[in-house]
Amino acid sequence: MRDCTETPDSEYKNWLKALKQKVMSTQLKAAVQVNSTLLAFYWELAEEIIFRQASSQWGDGFLKQLSKDTMSEFPEIKGFYLSNIKYIRQWYLFYSDEATKSQQLVGQLIQIPWGHNLKIVSKCRSVAEALYYVQNTLEYGWSRNVLAHQIESGLWQREGAVPSNFSATLPAVQSDLAQQTLKGPYVFDFLTLTKSYSERGLRG
Image 1: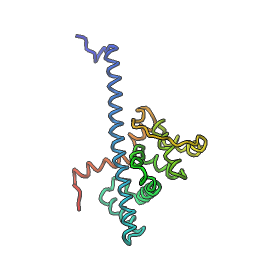
Image 2: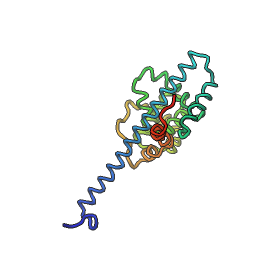
Image 3: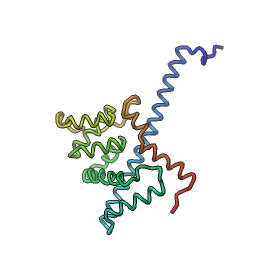
Image 4: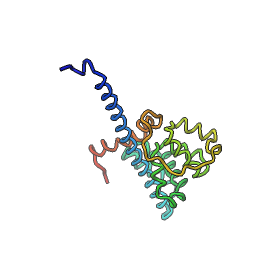
């Protein structure tokens, strides 16, 4: 019998190509899931922060203390830097009014990397404009640099339309968005929680 590892025929080559594609697709699914879980946590964290600041005497100093304590517990996770906690709060406030009208909104936002979300919130003046760029990022697989260019060039103002629905499919594996999702620093750092948990557990 011929050893296909030494002299692979066309059938084996085609199968191997399909296998590689499946591996990359599986990796992307895993990265997207972790990204979505992380951003869903960010949304809940911001909601808690807003609630507690409104119902108590906790002011801005509370955020600094929160950052200090969480960074002490999880030093590997960059998401607990004070600057990022402030961005999380800003992100939530930007969309919160619209989120009360649409249960699907948060599910749409958490499909793209955190860096993309920050770029959109910092550059867009309205939720309608922001959601337009969220949709197009998913549809065309934009990298963060391409996204920034499209916002700065006023693509939304030129096209003047808001997408009616959001794609439920993953970005193409070869797209810049897919690559940035796979290599997202916040996603990568967040995964250190698994190692931290297994070694130390969650202290009270």
